Image (tube, rainbow over all chains, first blue to last red; front, side, top):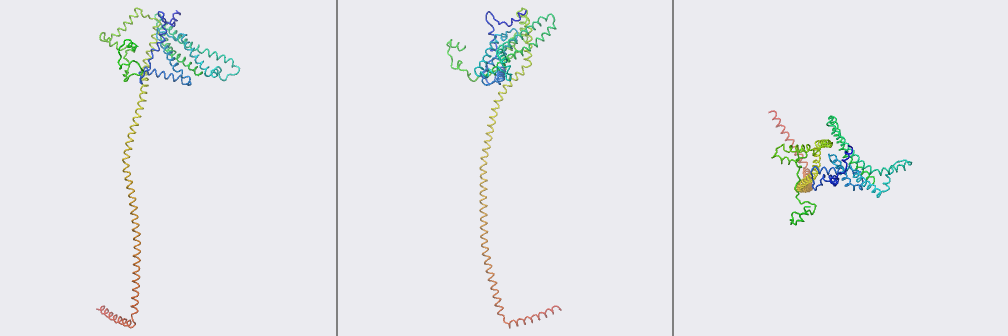
Length: 227
Length: 241
């Protein structure tokens, strides 16, 4: 029974065609292109407003060198939040549950920030390895610890997103199965479980949006350190 | 893609139907519809209901939907499993969200557009009002210029009056001075005449007095005494009578 619960996370193929490409291109289809018109309909107005606000929020603490990343991080945010939210629909596949996808986002972007820091301001970037005000005796230990924490970052980024989404989806499946199985046996308990499922779905919606935001926010923080 | 088809088929393309040579659209661009297509229950287009109305009336599309649903359930084309519950749950969340926050989000989007229009309108209004104000100021200035001629006339009158007054004052002064001088001459002449007169009177008196002899004086005194006696007698007689 447990194995079939993980079937939802298998990369879907149909007659040998990997459908994950379709799943990955779905967000692109859902956002209309900004028009050359001055006044738009509600959808495009809201879309433009959201992207503006988000970009302003993320890039306000960054210096001008970091603003080059605006298009990348804004599009990454839209992509992740759309994939997460679409995954909550029934019978859908969420690409962000795949560790491979999340690591493919986290490692190159993190590595880019580190390399930018090392190239442009190596002393300042290396200085992050030692927090201010540490006692002299602790310095070697702390440097080792900070280096480990630096290299853990891409791992943490990818695994955080994967784990949150996978766990959420699994919970939804489990509780839905419980409600489904209990319905003919103990209808009242089934109703309670359904209520629990409703609350869980609310939580999952929040988690979907927050996880995408946290991913992008952490990347912007790493960029802020190094730019 | 359409351009490729046209090219391949070799049809002559009129100059008015240009291929996409630039990203600019040819004006005038047709206006966008104000609202989206009408939908019933949030996702079924109204056109379906209109399509089925002549044949099946009002309940037609609903019967179609129910029939399709029952067909899929009974033939187990759609199997009810745990995902159905998950679908029901997320459906409830979505419907709740749309019903609760839909109008406010729509109003917010409309407000964003309204603010854009209002800003542009304000620029236009400010420009127009400033131009109107400038026109009125110009008219006022023109009216002021008309009044300036009157101002100049008044000033000219003032100056003329001042000059006139000054001239009259000087004339008056001249008259007074001349009269003073002439009065002096007259007074001088009067004085002369009086002196001459007095001198002549004195001389005549002196000569008369010197010409009176003592003999004449005694005769005149005696005559006076007899006259007085006569007069006294006459009055006495008048008093007793």
